[in-house]
Image 1 (tube, rainbow, N blue to C red):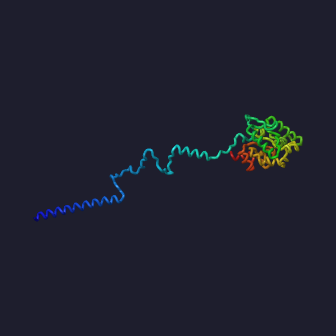
Image 2 (cartoon, rainbow, N blue to C red):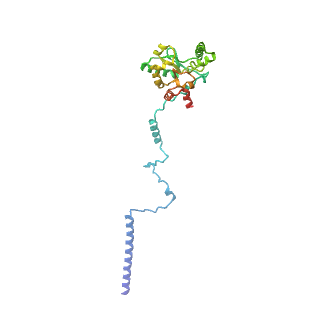
Length: 285
């Protein structure tokens, strides 16, 4: 009887212990689920875990860092197209050939060539300057000034003739030959040193002035047509070549009628800054 009671007590204790173990295991699972994590299998630590996640085929990252140096060909093309459309048209650059320097110290090259185009009457200029000269004359006429050319392209032979004539004028005025040549060179460039050989220079005055003086005189600076030319010549690529305050640099006496084509860019800079061609060429050398 006693053995039965002990055995029954033992079975009861086994059942109580088993029941308590099951309750603890169920409580552990409840904590895991309530914490929001469901671990299907352990994740082993590896050096590969620091690498970038693999992007599945057919998808693209939603964001690319700004520092990324990689760009698709389409993005590059679009960027290039946008840049070119926003860029302004480049300014017209001066043809360096129209900046040739011919003065008392720089003779015209023997192989220098010109392609002459008629501008007015018997006067021709090189094709680089001819159309601009026509436009200048037309604009002056529109402003009320009838402009006439009295010299343009000139051969070396023609310069020799004009220079010799000027020398004789000074000799007849009482100068010795050596001094007469020096003085004549201030007014008429000796052969080979005249800008007129280039086909880029012209002597231009108004018809009312020419009808009164019939010669080139400093008095032309007092005419309204000269004032208009001085103000607007650069718009057509021309400059007043021999200014009054630059005679010691150009080596030529002030000539309010002598205009030289250098291109619009150079002309505007020269006239706006009160330079002569020698000074401008020194600046851009």
